[in-house]
Image (cartoon, rainbow, N blue to C red; front, side):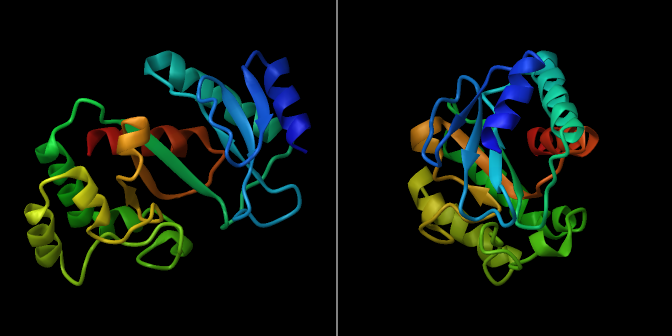
Length: 194
């Protein structure tokens, strides 16, 4: 249950609480309900803002605790990462959009089939017909809001700009849920590199 997961994390020295879907205390780890997760006791683990080596160590510890208590992921689970973009201008957002669009197929190749192309309604492709058409549309955008509307009016795309006004972050939604610290840390580094 959510309470057991939160307690196991607290026992391991991780500041964690249970929360409903709309919980927004991003100063600590939240064990949240999420209707998109299938299975018995389906919920998500949401991290606070993590930084540097201490953040990596904490993410690793959370994975170890979850594995130790028998937590599991299935194909309904996603691994979403928010990267700080508070000081970005429109050109940085355009460049990020173009990089992700250009390499979307390569990024798909390291994900299971359920997270590739448009196979998942919660992480749809950001490529519109062709990469060239996508680039042309991106270049016509003069605001982040236009970029976030370029491919749809919701957050359910592999790259989500809807979080920029509220959190100052861009969200990568492409990855499958995982409890493997190596995969998680490498995916975070990939997003940072992009």
